[in-house]
Length: 243
Image 1 (spheres, rainbow, N blue to C red):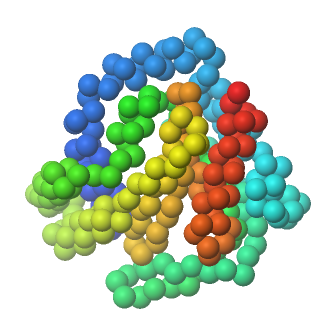
Image 2: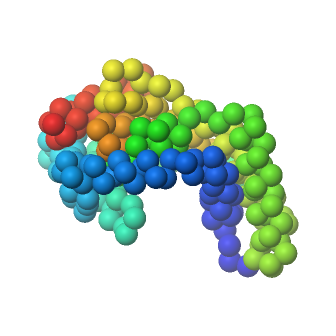
């Protein structure tokens, strides 16, 4: 059985998201209508496909970070349904990751500004995707993940030991999921806290005129400083590229 724990955990987290999606079916028609109106207005994510570096340029990232553009390393990942852009600078900082329970490992933590998930959506769908789950939603998701684990066990795609560990990882990730609203940014914006395998992340999710995007900023060990830089970068994108 070649299925990894991370892959299994991702399957369970997908089951969690699908459980929530059952409640958003009524949004689908509205989302289609919004995307069509955006296309008519010329505001669409497709305009930035394979070139989100036009939304967040090296010069913009250098200004936000306060670091020399000449020393930045650019990483631009382009997949069929996902695009990510990162500008990174060397740093002396490290972060702890937990490959196995109780065995943390220190790894380099480069100074990073990252843009991803540029897509069209509606405000209703955006708020649905990024909200603090209720106790009922978590309970239903737990049932959905247990059902998926039983299916994988019955089909011989994973052992019970594997699905138990993966389920534990997924539950830990869900327990760390927390959404915080950010005032006066775009139409609506939130910080989303999440984590898996001992690694915590904090992403800024922004919705503006039918377009949403995600920023991850890690320039300091000070969370408040990173938040300010992320908000600064988001405002630059909106003011300089989306008007």
